[in-house]
Length: 287
Image (cartoon, rainbow, N blue to C red; front, top):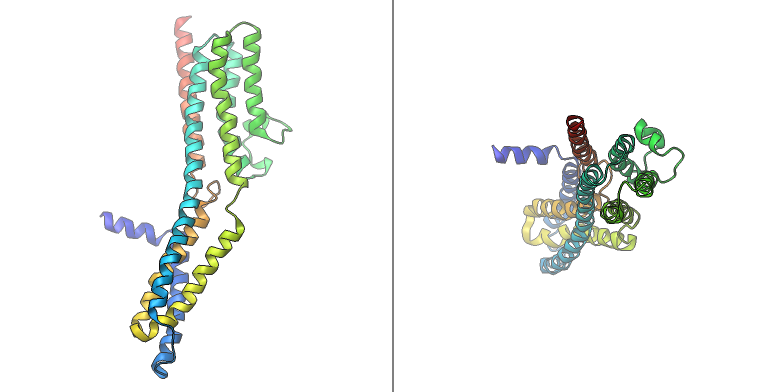
C-alpha cells in the first residue's frame, strides 16, 4: 500500500531517524517546565503568544535556508543532466561528422566514458588509488584529471582538423560540446567550494535552539501535558528543516540525500557505448 511504503521510507531514512531522536530529547526536556508548573503554579511568566509571533519569523528564516540549500542541489542536478546530454551529443558528432580514424574514435569513446567518473572522483576528493584503472591511465600524473581528459579530446579533434578530416564548420559544432564539458566541471567546482556563509548557518541554528529551548517554558502553563507533544512536533519539523538543508547543500557526497553520481556515470557510459557500437556495426556492414 502507498501509505505503508511511505511509512517504511520514513522509518529507514537515516536523516529523519536522527531528527526523530533529537525531537524526542526536546520532548523529554519539555517535561521539566511542565513539572515545575504543576508543582508551583504560575512559575512560568512567558506568554505563549510570544512564541507564536517568534515562530512566524523563524519560519521565514528556515524557508529561506532550505530554499537556498535546495537551489544548490538542483543546480548540481541540472549540471549533471547537461553532462549526460553533452556526452551523448559529442559522441554522436564524433562518429558522424568527418571520418575519424578508428583508433582515434575508440580513444575518444573511452575518454568520454572516463570523464564523468573522473569528475565524480574529483568532486568527492577521492584518493587517486580509488580511481578506476582506465581513468588513471587516461591522465597519468595529472592534478586535475577531468581537465587532462578534455585536453586529450581536443588533441584528437585538433589532429583531425590538421589532417583535414573535419572542416572548420564541423570543428565549431564539435567544439560547442567540448566547451560544455569544462563549463559543467567549473559549475560543479563552484558549488563544491562556495558553501553557504558560515555565519548565516550558525545564526539559523542558534535561532532554532533558542526557540526550542524556551518554547516549553512558554506553553507549559496554557497547554499542560500537551506541551510535551507540542514541543516534540515543533522540534521535529524545525530540526528536520535545518538538518535536511545542511545535507542537501553539499550534493556530491555519499549520503542518501546526495546526487546518485554513480548512476549518472553509468547512464553516460551506456549512452556513449550505444552510440559508439552502433556506429562500429554500421561501419562493418558498409565495408
